[in-house]
Amino acid sequence: MSDVTIKLNHPVEHNGETIDEITLRRPKVKDLRKLDAIKGEVEKGVHLVSKLASLPSAVVDEIDAEDFVKISEQVADFLGGSLPTGGTSEAI
Image (tube, rainbow, N blue to C red; front, side, top):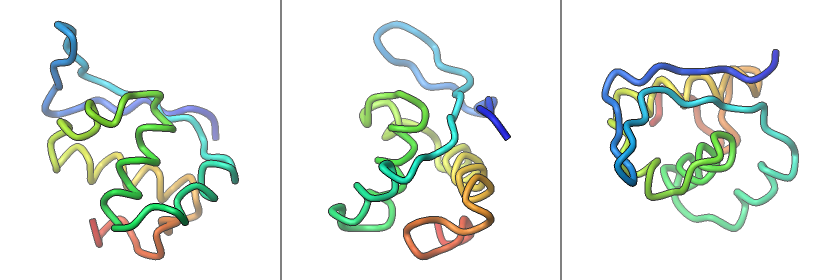
């Protein structure tokens, strides 16, 4: 599986631009290793989505929770169904 584009149900405005979809690349081990230093499951998720989508954390912070769950489910699919935070997408 390669990059996946996810349509946002609730677009985000950033620097005068409307972001209505994001493209996630597949995670690499180096992306997952950096999560060990981050406290909090949501913080880990925001960091990982920021890296995989090449978006600033400030943009990820503005993503609607419904869309964030959808994005988290895709990240979990990349990882064989579980999140590297130790939970599942239902936990977010």
